[in-house]
Image 1 (spheres, rainbow, N blue to C red):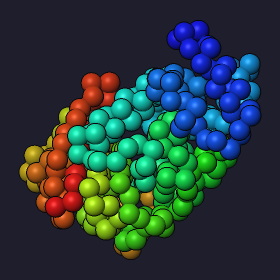
Image 2 (tube, one colour):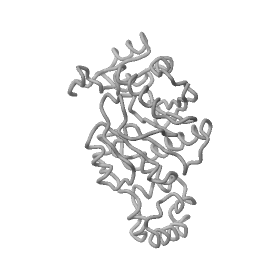
Image 3 (tube, rainbow, N blue to C red):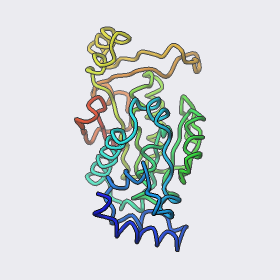
Length: 283
């Protein structure tokens, strides 16, 4: 794959060396997203300008601690999710990628934001997370986006909207019901006209995967009400409630929580089967 695009990569490296502030969108246009993902994992030494321009990766330990996976398998999942986001936005949005204002709600160490650098100028990319360590890691690894610390119960955002595309990968899969409702209302205020919110939810099958900690109580709660939340008891309460844990919900329950939103699209990827991707539009 790298040999196939060797000439293009050398040309891109020369372009970035001559114009270091140009960003990555225009230079990387001829490069497939999968190859850009490989460059994020490891830029060859003979391409020093690209190496300087592409953010470095978090350690395998950090990747595993945040997501349960690392390296090329995690990058494959990340690339597929970004492709899914752009496919959904293509069906429901109106702007070109380079014109988008994007918000990663719950950006973690920036594993998805770095892939957006191929399509969206850094000034249009925003990431928020309630854990300072996440923001620190994004900066440590040279992610040139707008980053800010958010609240665990996000009644407001620390970045200014509106945003054309907001995504939340594996965020609502961890929130209590009341926190999820608040977050959805806050994101509704931040979405642009014609914008799209893409988030993931877990199906009831998650509890069988989860094992003894959640099953069968998670399954029973999910079947009974369409929503199951198992708080992580090692977390400090926020406003009297543990807001973070493990969560599953039905599409019907998501629709109840998401006042002011309408479910417009649903996707599912076999390589990441316990993350259902749901697109919402302002209602």
